[in-house]
Length: 129
Image 1: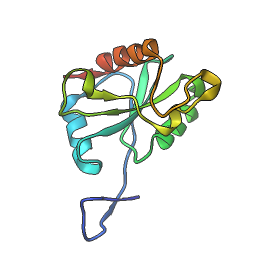
Image 2: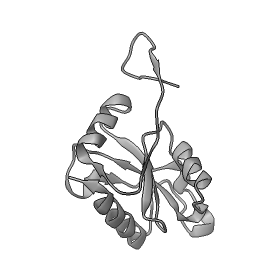
Image 3: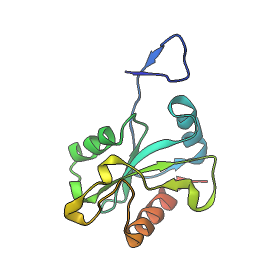
Image 4: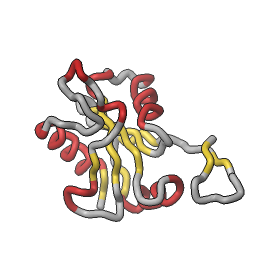
């Protein structure tokens, strides 16, 4: 259960993570972004399986969901999606789970441009605009 940050009465609601293995529409993402973060949807992408999980309060929860489904830690990267934005700014490569010194990623951002492009390609296939 998570507190809705826009609800002054402290209404609690459950977030249901969604596995995106086929596709999700931009309209669905817009609805998710309104419900919790007012403009963004957190996602974790599995770059080997070409899938992602969306709609959780923390990337770590989505990461754990994918690990439970058999994904490997080194294949999982956290991003934020901005469904109201077009172009390169639709995806933000920022998450605490991305801090991976053993993989030469020393910040919350995904530093490797090839990895960014791989993630962009996966998201482009999974998100129907």
